View 1 (cartoon, rainbow, N blue to C red):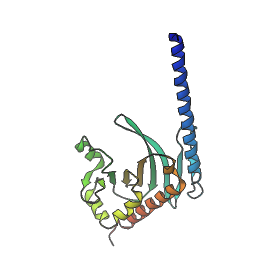
View 2 (view 1 turned 30 degrees about the vertical axis):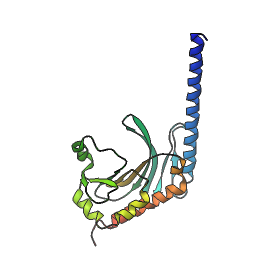
View 3 (view 1 turned 135 degrees about the vertical axis):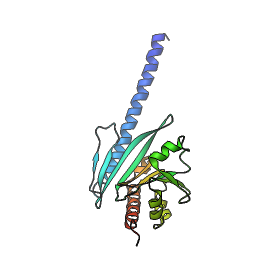
View 4 (view 1 turned 90 degrees about the horizontal axis):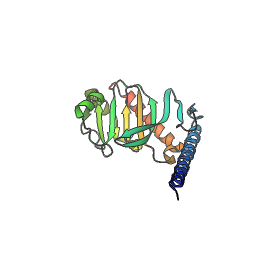
Length: 205
């Protein structure tokens, strides 16, 4: 084969691989859109998607709470990880950040991270590193709810932000089972119960 023929041959291979990736991506996003459409009636929602090559976005309501489901690519070192994000409106005057202890590496700049995420709350739940900008208020609230019981149904999630105006949870998207409607509904119900429990106990009885 001549140099020109070799170049054309490899160009054709790259073109075929690129087209296969585009088609696979389109099929994946179409499947996610179908899953989200099955949620619209129950959550008074709608599915948004600018074009077939971007990930769909779901927005709706759980009673009076705004609900959003979407995908976000997060860069971790040299890797890019696709996260499936849930956001449910809540009425909490404080913030809690929960990071799975066995999932995230230690923070390189602890002082800088503490400025943004708050100080660590020790011995509340060993599976998570828990941080808050208002640690005393957070400890007082958590002492009045069964925190472990509420977290157990949300064990799939590696990151949880509780408050101040929403509960936001994220997990690396692994396959279509993550977006299966019955599984999504279970997670939403667990979020709603957690929000209700935290809101009820803001003022001690």
